[in-house]
Amino acid sequence: MYGGGNLLSAATNAELQKKIDALDAQIKEIKAAQVKSNDFLEERVDKIETSTMVDKINLGLDFRTRVDNFEAKDASGNKTSAKNVWSNRLRLNMNSDITNDMSFTGRLSMYKNWSDTGANYIYSSMDPMQGRRPSDSGVFVERAYIDWTAIKGDIPITFTIGRQPSSDGPSHQFKDNTVRKATYSALSFDGAADGIVATANLQKVTGIDNMALRVGYGKGYQADTTYTYIGDSGAIKDTNVLGVFLDSSLGINGSLLQLSAVQATDVVSNTVNSSGTSTNTNIGDVTLYTAMLEFTNLANSGLDLFAHYAVSQSKPNGITSNQATPYGDYPMGLLTNTPNDTEQKNGKAYWIGGRYTMPIDSLNNPKIGVEYNHGDKNWFSFTQGSNSLTNKLATRGSALEIYYIQPINRYANLRFGAEMIDYDYTLSGYQIGAPVKVSDVGGTTLDKLNNYYLLFNLMY
Amino acid sequence: MNLFKSLLLLFVAVTLSYADGKGLAKSLGLNPSSKAIKQWEMVFEKDSKMAKYGIDKLSDSDKEALKKYLTAHAADSDHPAAAGI
Image (cartoon, rainbow over all chains, first blue to last red; front, side, top):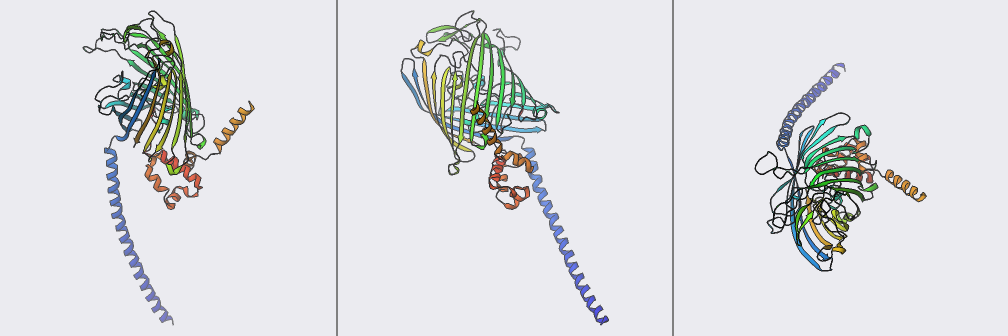
């Protein structure tokens, strides 16, 4: 029995050894396959990594085609219209993370009316409006700035240097069906602008989301001469712009509060007399105080709400310059036509609105929105570079806009809208000339302006 | 005044009662910008992938809120722009 047992045991051992050998061979095969697979994966990852490192700038596309139908009524009741006005707008957005504390953001813009080849709108070739008002098919640099976090620690400080994110600011993002696209309340400032902004991020020390204090410096006008860099024969002083902005969340997701004070000193008149000669000169200082509050998707209800309020203080320096008008040359100062007038003109405006995202999945959750703004006699803001053709937020009177956004997919949508502006005073959006009641001027003075539009927008 | 207080309390209560995607992402340690929109969508298509991130344990409404947040803030999503952001 014992001998038989040994034989059996030997046979079992041999079988076991055979199995172990087979397993060993299998393990070797698996290991070899794994090494091969790892090499293959490493090669693929290397390729992706190389591609990522070589692609220094990420590009994004923003394309819009729209048709506008304008209807105007003057103070004497005559109606005029410009209907079926089509335009294209192309924006190429760029960004690049250069290092952990330095990034670049840029935007190239083209905005033109169909088949047109030149600037269609008054002052549209001026710096804040380039690429933001229809002109030709040329591409303008609307944004180009470096964010550099130079000071780290509990209160990191980031310097934003270059052509700033200063256009289409809060709360235009609701109507544009996007997210916050600029630093400042669009009631007071909208347009391309060069400057330097220092942002102290207070989030860490206060524990409050998005809390930041900003100080910004820029120029509304810089005197230089075509022929030399030594002085300026016209002796026009630079328009210096200095602003302080405080941003904060209110402890509710999607909330933003912003308080700001901006002063522009030595504002220029940009006037030209009837013989076509520039009469440009410094006409005074403008200070703007703005408070804004907005809620995005309030309590997950699909409702967005916003309210802005601003006060403008325009202090003429007593100097006027001649501006050509249909009635001849007129002396124009800062919100005045009277030479030596240095009395401060106070204006105020507000802008309120809301948007609701309808919970209709089958229609891709369409949105409806309404906005209303009102400005008084002496309201003046720096929104000449607004993307809105009517610059409605500069209205000395009231403007109502309603719109419907129909998403096509994640990236594209259609928007139908109606904008109705009722001007109480003349020269909305202009820093020159004394505003006068539309009914007092009469004649061909613009009284009411409506625009019914449809646009296709793609952001990818 | 009482009406104002009641409305304020109601507003605060409604606000706090909603589970938001941001909070869920934070509690699960998920960084939305670590993936592109399509990659996040693929995570929510497979139970095994959701389990990997602990998403499978959430209710359907929480999953929906989380997906909305992650795709809205994904690496290739529409990002906010302002000086210093």
